[in-house]
Image 1 (tube, rainbow, N blue to C red):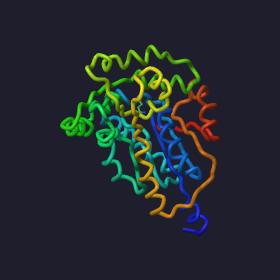
Image 2: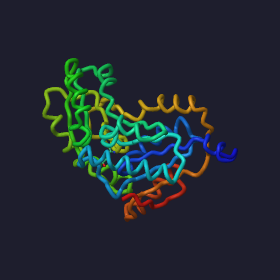
Image 3: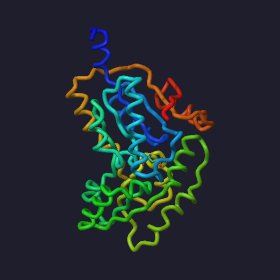
Image 4: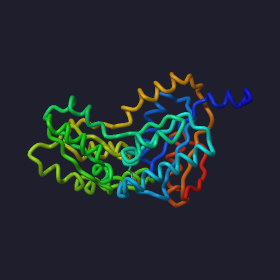
Length: 273
Ligand code: DGL
């Protein structure tokens, strides 16, 4: 290996992916702390949404994505910026790749210490909430407090809509949370178990009772990322940030402005069958 290549390989490139724009909520948390990282973000919009697909299907899709991207680009670290894809593929997927892979999963453990009224709400996709790892964790922590689960794909669609610059109905969002309004005690701590949901945090704050604490899983992976960067002595890298998408649609055109505002300046379609 010549020196030039060796030098290039020490520069950090983080690959992030999600079915849609949800992973941008993860990306922006990382970028806040590590602005000088080269990011490649894949929107697997051809297979959007993930939230209603089976665990096995999503697992296979994740393997395909990581194989294809690591063939074309050097990856220092991959982040599965999707709860649905993370719970469906981590930790098994790590065995197939030489670079580290981090996923985001609902932060149930931390919510226990945060709740005051003992009622925790978790909102995520159907596939995330049906995952045995998530279900087991919920059952474990139910010994300490009440955990109310809510699955919603519509909230994912509304988040995508917002990023396209379209109006989203607060009434519709409130209706999604109706089951929790029928409870004796409304959760005072809400785990956002889908990376799309922090994108509509302002709207959630408007319609839900005041003083709710929202837990965003992406914050909990920042220390892991820092550890990997320090351990591998990666050099920071100010190459242009790239957006890859698996299907060209009008939606891509609509979200381009937003993605540029988030620091992406190169857009390209990639074929992943
Ligand atoms: N953003 C994904 C998650 O965190 C779900 C989006 C989808 O359903 O495609 O679960």
